[in-house]
Length: 329
Image (cartoon, rainbow, N blue to C red; front, side, top):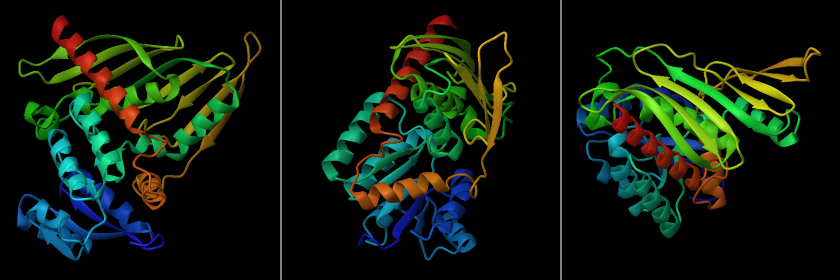
């Protein structure tokens, strides 16, 4: 692959997330969707036919060693991410893997080390961090317009139907924390930095699947975050950031906001308020895949917008939340 050649992508998985993202990959001229792999050849064949993909594999290892792909997108259940990402990187392939990258911080650290050793990109698919609204939010924070960010609230949740198996199966990493909490915790770390203390209350099923949690995080620079996630009740998918001079409200949907509201001023005078609206490209994944191609062409093993260290820090925080939920239940 030369610098100007399209990156040839192989998709691992044929479920709902792969169906949502494949269109965005195909929409980028710098990307070519070359192959798809599934555990079942019939599933791979059907997905390939539906999306106009030339090659379909019933064994991902065959796709990894085929020489037909440069990078893989992993859209399988949470608990399979570590093994698939490791196998792909050992085959010399770049990896974009759906969040969470792995089920433990130790696994994430190992994958980051392997990416550096092999000289390939490893990127957790945290598309929220690459969205236009989030990049604009960080730009405003860096400018000092709303002062020093000190407090953050965010939520994400809905009553998930029983037939949505991956949310309810502990063997697939089910629960609110790994599917929704990963967004809110990532947002808090993105804005406020390093977590130094974690408190959490919530409800667990007998099989260990977490139904909901309320999390309070304290950060190294005295910032505070209050986060709520649930798979049994509705939590508005939005948040806000409070700074010393003003605030930024993140509109719905939290993982890909369509707007932000910036308010600046000191009471009792009314604040100056403005709305900024953002158009979503495709299903919302284009900015992330565009960034992945940028990193691959530049020879990076991570992207500065969402580096390995943040993935590890978020997983470490999630492990602490899990421990708190088990001890309080």
